[in-house]
Image (cartoon, rainbow, N blue to C red; front, side, top):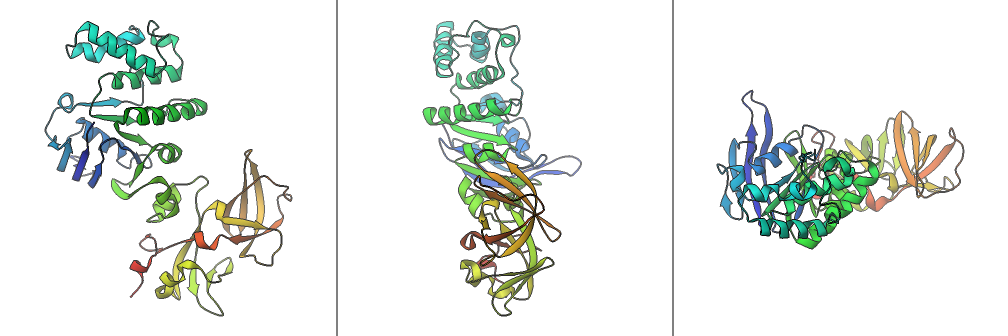
Length: 369
């Protein structure tokens, strides 16, 4: 396996469009790193530059300590798994798995041994004589993974490999990929637009938007301490609730919103908001941190229940707070009918505050002068 290092890597197209703007990060030997973001954010472009399928406009890309900017894809010792399976329909599973080794001139006995080893790992050993048309979607995806595994490359690149599978298969294949990564200790770079895949698979996540890296961190650090509004709203399902208002200290701390004043007690983040008095801030509240109360004694807000979404082990409450839509996540419980007024408190220690102009998280370091 190998490390991958990107130093100010850029992609600028002939029409001037910037596909990737100065990406700099290192991928450790044996790490599974996920590139995630909305469509057009530059994640696949970045993966293709690592693969050698897109030229690098500026910056340096190194694999295992070797600069590969001008190295042909076949000389980089990487294997790529694409969104579509790209299997040869006229070949058997064994022939598909061994085709790349055959092209590289490996001996038939070696090809057969490596194909059987990979097929056993992926539980395809009973389907080696089958052709792709006779396989399920999950089995075809495993063949595509096996074709990469059989080469034992330095780096695996996976470009949205599960997007063509149904929800049940995606879940099982996520588990399969995570298991394979632990078993092989391989360096993997995984591209997806699915935040659930990113959160469950990645040891670290690179968040991209508009070709610009927004934040790099572990999944839970990204979720619990997003660097800006984009990261806060992208990660999490349902998305984070965002309330805009003016931070005031009239008879205690409060956020004055167009829907009404939200009174705050002593919040842990108060020291970082000292420089924001009488200025606009954005309050972020995760749905699970909007706590349904039995009475209005300690309520932070009152909201009207519009729609109830029971999903088994939890319930999503779609609310209306003035003209603001909110979502709360609660355990299964008996609830009043839509149209009822409900009282909510906050998990005060888990609130988030953002600068509405710059969009960045408000911390003591970003305090207003």
